[in-house]
Image 1 (cartoon, rainbow, N blue to C red):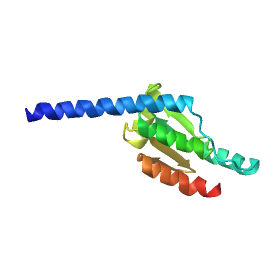
Image 2: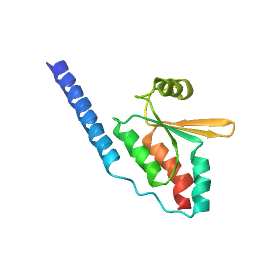
Image 3: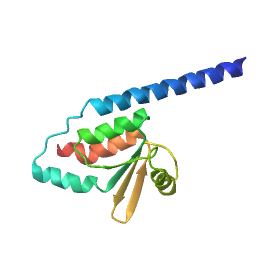
Image 4: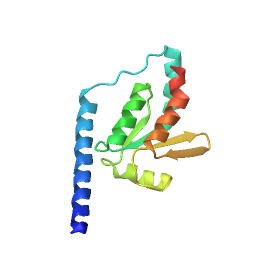
Length: 134
């Protein structure tokens, strides 16, 4: 009896997460993000820097949409890779970062690569490197 209750709770939580993802995906497509306004020179510099980052995400994942919109708010031109639509992106994620989890921000900094998986860690990294410039 207790086992069945646990399964029902897990299914309910999974369904709730999926519905939340669908709603956020719809909102992401309909409601535009207002990016931070910067002068052209600063924006050009940030465009070059942010192109070295790749965001592995999934449109049905609320955390992915949250991170994606945060990048847009900061005015970053991060390379977006939807792992649900392109299998090679998922393979890159697993080979490079070691985990098939999204969101994941890959940061290529010269010879070094970093893979951030936590939405909070990603946001903290972005804010510390790009928000103070705004």
